[in-house]
Image 1 (spheres, protein in one colour):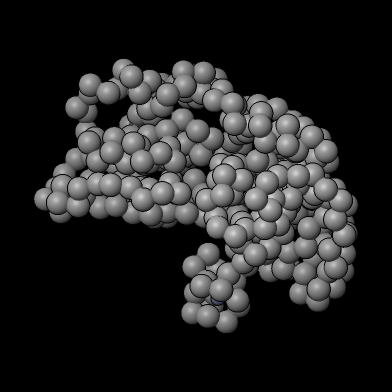
Image 2: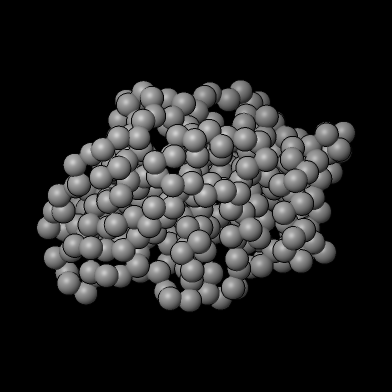
Length: 323
Ligand SMILES: [Zn+2]
Ligand SMILES: [Zn+2]
């Protein structure tokens, strides 16, 4: 089977089809999304990772010891816990010390014709959600986790720093599920303009970073989703005393900031990562929110390297591999 493999460099190569273990399902991947984490690994941010990349996907189960799964269209939660530690028992596999993570840590990912995942990780995609809508379940789950990390009310003044894919999804979540006063600041007018395509521009203020840099406007909640340490500096500048900064970025490097400023101003800094796929599916069903306008291009798996390069272009948001 064809796979996009990383061992210090990316290559498309032929690999053995994985053997399905007793507690696993074998899935024929139909479509996968390239995300910032994949780029981070390709740049070497996760030391020693070797294997097939990719964790955002949909596919059909072709083999499983529980026959009802065979033939079903699924995606899968990416954190694979040990199953017996206190975190796994509490459903927090993402904090299991011994976890493997699909395409990220010790487990071959989904940029491959076939992938195996534990049965407990697979989630069926309801018929009413199309393949391309379903590709957004993983990033949408991460966006919805913001609302589980911090309660945000309608009258909160919220700033999103960043205009990448996750930032745009978080913006849509806040517009739909909260309806708070929202400002989003980014570097790319064409990305910010995408939010206007969704007919919800009345509740959101989009600003270019250059126009915002002299502003002293402050916010109760600032969501940092740039992946860039300067985003945290901006968040600290624009948060009210006693306000909250939610960090959605992993920087891949150490970041300097002044803790005294956080103490004196009693600022809360909250880290927030992966979320529940079931919540994401419920959101897609309830709000009929379509994120497919974020898809910039689609490539075949054999052109995965080209797709990777294309997805690094500053005007590109989401690139899919379609098998
Ligand atoms: Zn991702
Ligand atoms: Zn565990």
